[in-house]
Amino acid sequence: TVTGTCTATAFSGDGSGLTGVSGGKVLQVVKGTLDGSFGTGSSSFQATGCSVSITTTGSNKVLVMAGGTVNNTSAGSGAFTTIYRGSTNISDHGNFMAGYWQEDNSNNVEQSQFLHTLDSPGAGTHTYQVYIYAHNGNGTAYWGYRNTGVITAMEIEA
Image (cartoon, rainbow, N blue to C red; front, top):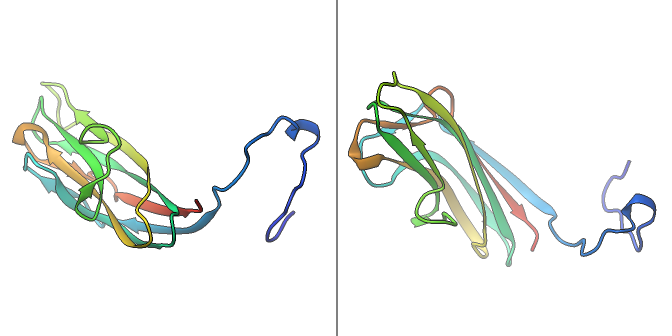
């Protein structure tokens, strides 16, 4: 059992093949929740209110993770979700991180989503929030549909 920092100068046994082990220390963890669900019929991203603020130092990174259920009230329609830092969409591919689409004859089918991304925001206080929109403006797209949506931000040492 180690309390505090354990400094190793060499590896032996099963760890002898390890190389490039450095950084990655978790400095802080901040959690937030969405009380209830958020719904929108908009065909552009809308803030869900599932957000968290974290204050970082130096060039440290932030690992952002969010989870919740999604639903769209219109059969054959769907929703797209992503994470914003302030007013900036930080999706690392395209313009959304996760999609949801239900079949034409579905009866309000829901799906669980888990989003995560590693951000390099720089020093300061940053707010991360889940955004969602209804694809083509059909139906109402919900985040945190059956349970509370959650979001966690972790500052990781550079």
